[in-house]
Image (cartoon, rainbow, N blue to C red; front, side):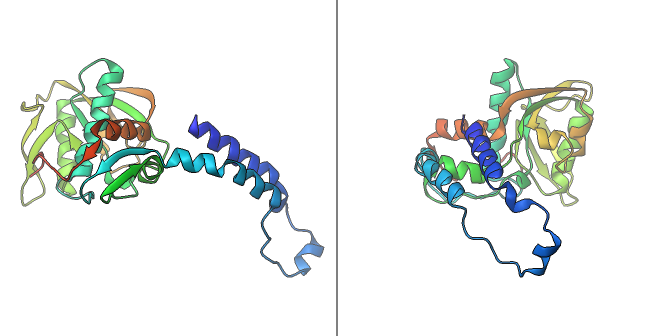
Length: 239
């Protein structure tokens, strides 16, 4: 509903201000250009919805107890977002999902102690990516985890391993078990990562793909709301 509101609002603004984008005539090019003043019609349109939008964006999602950032080899924010997509994917599919993974580059904000609002969640995840579940063979999962190790760590869920001095994954366990190279594993991620927009090429060669009709932003909003309070606690999944 909120996304639809933005679409309608932006469309209205574009139609209302479309004359600003028409090509200049020869006569107009001779006149020094001046920055246009505010369009009163557009300003009125925005003002009519501003208070409602501010109320919606100020809704509290959770309370942050510590300063939380992404980091390597693991971080509390990385653990939270990867756990969130894995858990939600399992609920949506009604089936077990072995892993969750998403790159840090998808996110644009860190959290400071205090109220975490819906507006901040839109800043945290500003993109319209949706949730995807991929099926990978065990051999491909091993490649994926080594790609994580090569960059020193990334947000992952359902996996435990250590990174050696050559940035190679060692002692890898998926759901507390050694990887079977011939077994099929379900991996939750974002549509952007699955489509080749991240740094994990192993995701681009999935045997199966299921696109779920839910945005990753909504996944995180629901997950953080369920947590209520968020602390800087990690569990050593990457060492």
